[in-house]
Amino acid sequence: MLCFLGLFVLLCLIGINFKKYKTIDEDALSHDRTLMINGIFVMLILFSHFNYYVTYTSVVDTIFEIIVSVEIGQLMVTTFLFYSGYGILESVKNKKNYMDNFFRKRILKLFLSFSLAILLYLLLDLIVGYEYSVKTILLSFIGWESIGNSNWFIFATFCMYFSTLISFKIFKNDYLKGILLCFIFSVCYIFILRYFKYSYWYDTILCYNFGMLLSYYKDNIVKFLKNNLNYILCLILTFLTFVLCRFTEYSHLVFELKSICFVSIIFLITLKVKIGNKVLLWLGKNTFNIYILQRLSFIVYKEIGLLDYNIYLYFCISIITIFIIAFVFDKILKIIYKSLKLI
Image (tube, rainbow, N blue to C red; front, top):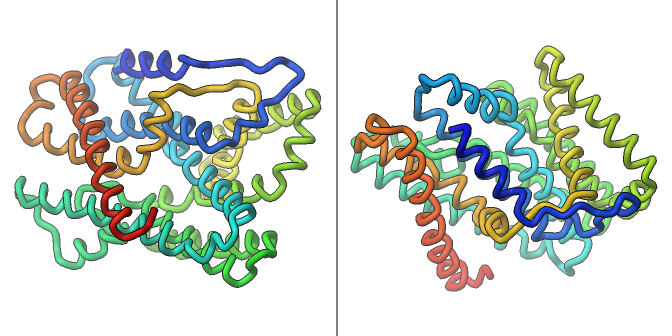
């Protein structure tokens, strides 16, 4: 499996471009560039979730598992939250009446997409004989429970979207107050969820709010980082803080700080290094489809015995199938969105 990870790293290096020493790439936060970064991390999530279905006997494969699931682990989702918060506030600032259509074009679209995926999992459950209570099935449509699918991130996204809708409906063009209210909602989310769910449900959530802050102060931040000394100092301090958090005993606040440092490092690197190609762009555009549908493939091929035959063949065929399903699913969603005038 370490070879597959290595091949993916090589793929990520295709199209890489280093900026001149005294400049930064002001296009680092463009929509396509952030999609490509998310494309990298959705593949890492695929690698990580694959580990839940297999038991490794090779030392090399165990190293792969440690790198992906332990060393990177929960940090894989931080860019999704970070760039989502950033992108939404950019839209609020630059698109007239954006919040008027936010429920339909963000929340409703997410619910319809997720519901269609849940129906696929229900169908698979019927075929393979998995049984869930009616309560579990109904709650799975909002991500509170799972019927085989990934769910916590979708539930968190619903909560962040609703907090954004309420905040900017109340404060409208007062962006800073809207950001502050969103932050208060996130803190409430954290305190409530800690009594009901595992820590991974909430310990990266502030990256969403951090993305909003970056959008709000973007011009000042970019201007500050154009000074090469400022850039180097920020990168060093952020990296040292990240390392310190890494070797500090776990607590929620420390992990939130670690997550924010991680996305900050990604942001700083992208100011100097242009990463991305058409493959990563496709992965980024299909992040939701790949993330939510991946377990269908893993479950099916495990049930038919491919995992017992050869884990590497199981991985390759599963990945190819995931991409095919994601492609078809995207076409179906576009038809649904178009018929409901959501695009």
